Image (cartoon, rainbow, N blue to C red; front, side, top):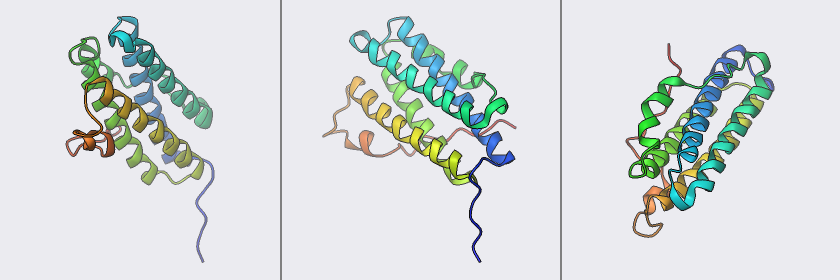
Length: 165
């Protein structure tokens, strides 16, 4: 007899989803800082939009896990990426790398989550972040033809974030 997975997040799921929210809040703050400083030139509005998407993802996670949501960014990620996000020369590639890191992170979470609601939510976030990565590749000057792998795969050197012990 097969047991159906739980619908609602388990206690272990809540910990993983809280971590995902912290990563989303760090991404939101990085993109917001870049947009506020004018990084991205003619793409500043797109950068602000990506910040809003990360905010929406964090709010959706918060709605799912309620009071267990930390409502605080993953500061180690923010601090490690902030300077690159505030520099016109490094912003687009750094942002593309961050989005790919979040794709890898959330894909690892989908396979680790037991509850179907959490898995479905994180899978929907992966889809948006993969689209962000494609848009940022264009902003970085990559070509969908000659740099096709940048649009179709997560680079091999991208490592998923893991909850800090």
